[in-house]
Each structure stands twice: as structure tokens, then as C-alpha cells.
Amino acid sequence: MNHNASQLNRRRFLKTTFASAAGVAILPAIIPSSAIGADGAVAPSDRIVMGTIGCGGRARSDMGSFMNNADVQMLAVCEVQGARRKGAKESVDRRYKNQDCKAYIDPRELLGRSDIDAVLIATGDNNHSMISIEAARAGKDMYCEKPMSVTIAESRAVSDAMKRFSRIFQCGTQRRNVGNFVWAAALARSGKLGEIKTMHAEKAGAQSGVNFTVLPTQPEPAKDVMDWNGWLGPAIWRPYNSQYYSRRFWSHHGDFSGGSICEWGSHTVDICQWAIDADDTSAIDYEVINNKGDVQATYANGVKLIIRKGLRFGTCPVRIEGTEGWVETGDSGQFEVFPKSLMAERRFKGGYPQNNHVREFLNCVKSRQQPVAPAEGAHRSISTCHAANICVRLGRPVKWDPVKEEFPNDAEANRLVSRAYRHPWRL
Image (tube, rainbow, N blue to C red; front, side, top):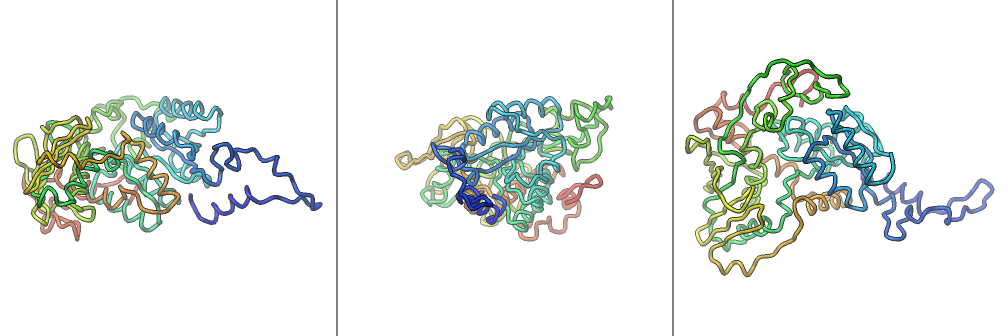
């Protein structure tokens, strides 16, 4: 919840017998059983009151996972596209069989509500970082979809904000709570694969890189139909064209996303770094290894990471190779290991795609413990993805200093660590 004091006050309000001005006790029977947690209901003092910012396709899945938890009460939605905003409110109202959900266009209005404890941030990639920082300033915990940033500087600012404002941040890298990925990473850390030498992380598309296409101007719709200024967020101004907010377009546009490397790398590179206990660092050397923009990155300990296509077992697969064995797995749930004897040790937590990840976040909101995908770990893995993209964009090898978080003696690469923001946006 927001504050221990407010939580205590809510509990005291519900659990204390009130006396009237005349000194006559008001009978507890007037309090509904749901208000004190009877009959399996969750008392208001233990509920996490939430809002959702960004209500597109991924958000609908996330919202369902959150609302399936009895201790969550979704009270608000925010979306710049009118049809999605209307649909999200209707979905929440159907779930709770009331009309209590409030719909907003501007996320700052939702974040300004004192009754909201936490938010789901599921906008396009372009707005993840700035809304996360605004949520932290507003005293909200957050589950933020991946990738958490469009630049290295943005995710650094997000991680710093979570520390400064003591917020719980769970990045939507849910494979850290999916059994086969958890087991693969644990196997790598156990030493049973020997010394880890090479890791393979799948990227989303065959070709790396982004474009900066400027589309022809179209008539801009009314704000309640599409808040174009809000959709652009901190990105450079582009005259309105509806194609920009087609996912097939913006997910490969450098103003709004990081292309195929960041799309799946935010999961696959993340699992690889987690497997070698690299949540506090990033790879240091990057080079393009073929004409598809596949990248080989090397960590300070000599472990190599190859970001490419061609792995097995569904979407977002990874392969981790050591001196004594290897493991490969993906979203299909299938995996293969060598030596085969390691199969006898497999253990699974179950739950896919995001149910366990959502539940862990909710538990951490209550306990104030850090979740399995905190801001710093997510920042470090997406930094590796961004540095790989910079390598591709420049068409040459680059070196990264993960301590100073800069490209040493490389002004050209360092200019791509951040991006220009439109007024009044700033980190």
C-alpha cells in the first residue's frame, strides 16, 4: 500500500467498534461481512487498489491477471485512444458488476488520485519510462511492461527514481517466474553446466535495427478519439498519421522503440544475464557478426552473448552453454539439456504467461521486498540490448563501461545513450 500509516488507519477503522456521541455502541452487525474479510472476502485494509495506464492488447491480458486476484481492486483506467479507453472501462465494470471504474486520457490525473496504491503501465514502449518516473513521484508502486525504456539514460533514470522514492517496481519480464526459464537459469548458476562460456538470446525479427521514417500528415482527430500529443509523449514531434500507432510500425521505429533486439531481448537477454548473476552489470564489447545485424556481446568475465534468430522451442528461446553441458528452452515449455542426466533435476513453479509474476508483484507491494524483476536488473539487461542496437546503428564495434555507463572515448555512440525530449518532458 502507499503508507504503513494509512494501512493501519484503514485497519483500525474497520476493526474498532465505534461509539456514538451518546456513548451507545454501534453494533458490528451493520458492517458487511466483506468489509471485515469474512466468507473468504478480502477486507479493504488488505486490498491493493490499482489503476491501469495503457489499455491495448497486452494490457488486456495483464489486467485480467491482476483482477483475478481477490485482493486487487481495479478502480481506474487511462488510455489515449477513445475506443480502447471505453472498452477497458467496460471490461473492469463487468468484472466487478458496477460502474465504479473511472476512465482518463491523461495519466497524471489517474496518478493524482490518493486512493490508488499501484499501477499497471502497459502503454507503448515510448512512454514506459516517463510514466514510471511520474508514478514513483506520485507514491505509486508499479508493474511496468517491457521494455522499460527506449534509451539507456531512460532506464537508468527509472531505476534511480525507484530507489529515491522507495517504490516497488516489477518489470513485465514474466519469464523470471515461468518454470522452464527459472530452471534453466538455476541450472546455469548451479555450476552443473561447468563454466558458462556462451549464451544465445533470440531476437524478435530476422533483421536488427530501427528506422526513422516520417509519414505524410493526416487530419488529426479530436482529443477524445485520439490524444495524439499524449501518445507521442516525450518523443520528437511528428505530425499525425494513424500508421504510427500501428504496432507493426512503431515497434521498429527508433522514436518509439528498439526494434527486434529490444522486443524479445528484453526477455531473452534478461534471462541470460540473470543466469550468470549479471543483474548489476551489462556486456562490455559489442560487434555485428553478419548482414542480419546479429550481435555478439562479451561480458567482463569473458562470457559471450549472441543475439540472433534460429533457436528452438517457440518464442523467446535461450540457450546457455558451459564447459560441461548446455540447456536450451523457450515459450513452448520444451527444453533440451546435456548431459541428459540433468533432466532428473528439473523443477517447475508453473504458471504462464504472467500469473506468477503478477502475484509476486502484489506480494511485494505488501511486504515491501524487492521482486524478482526489479528496476535495476531490468535496466542492466535492456542496456545490453540498447548497446547492441547502437552497435548495429553505427555499423561498427563499440565498447561499453557498465560502471560509468558510457562508451569510453566515443562521442558518436554516447550521443545515442539518450534522446532529445519535447518540452515540457524531461528526465
